[in-house]
Image 1: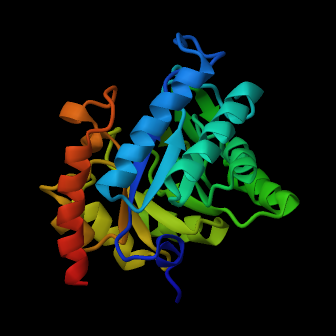
Image 2: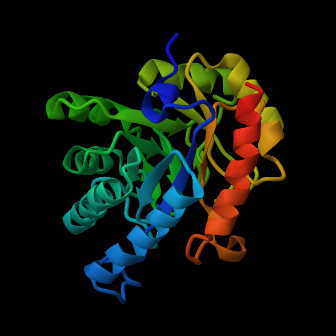
Length: 272
């Protein structure tokens, strides 16, 4: 079986750094013009590149409270796509996108416009309940959107949604969820903690890795202190909170934190 992560990033155990966007025009907390939002995104992306990450993911995390899929505004999709394209050009790194909340079709459109190689899906194949309300399975429409757009964009999908609860509560076996997710079209499986920045439980990572036929990514809470134990099982990670100044999600990227984490990861790779 080929490892699509190594194909995308050219290394084992890739680390994807997050480019968290400030609130975009049209969202309640927006106070900046697009040019300033872009400048801050490029600042963070370039710090991530210089610090040694293997890829970056652009996400509209500032657009709280999030809209449900299919209610996300056109301007959000357009701006995320435009910024992701500039980030990709500026850094030369493989780039992904994710438009919240769980805007999978919207993310695919942004990926097609920006040249992004993957999107993240908080929940791909199951319905769930969250702050946004009832959110249906994204996979049926998303798989058709990929076909219609004729794009090779990978789906990195969480097996357990972070900020919500599965509607079908009787489907509690994690192994079953992993298999269903792979069957539905996920290219990599994401194991996350209970919230943004929370450490992913090692037992969850181990269980998913034992079941999954696809690569497994850590989706939250990777730090220099836990990287060795988590990456013993996982094939890579998406990292946001730790890489910010003082580990605060609202702060800019801290290049020294990026370098510290990547030094640990490089040592881990030497033993793979």
